[in-house]
Image (cartoon, rainbow, N blue to C red; front, side, top):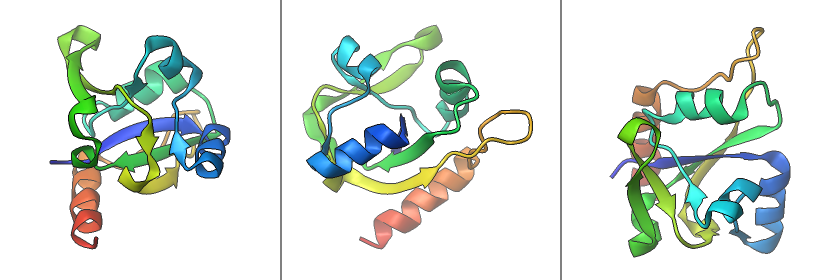
Length: 126
């Protein structure tokens, strides 16, 4: 299974590293689950919910490490999005990378194909 992705602020991730678990953003806590995106959903998620923010990190997560608490549920336009009904254990995280902005204020994201190949290489290195 391919990685799923969480976008969060550097501050939220620093707190997760201190606490050894990611409890979710304010929006996650309000909704009762941690929002994730697939590689194909990532650009739209960044533009819709995080436009112009320069303090963000992209977190790659192994969905198989999350067990039955991970559900794919309908959201934007009926697309199935990964939702985690538990805290995110840091042991499930495969990479953390900054999400820089280009000159127009859009996030520079790896292509879905690159994320997919990156995920495979990272997972095989475990």
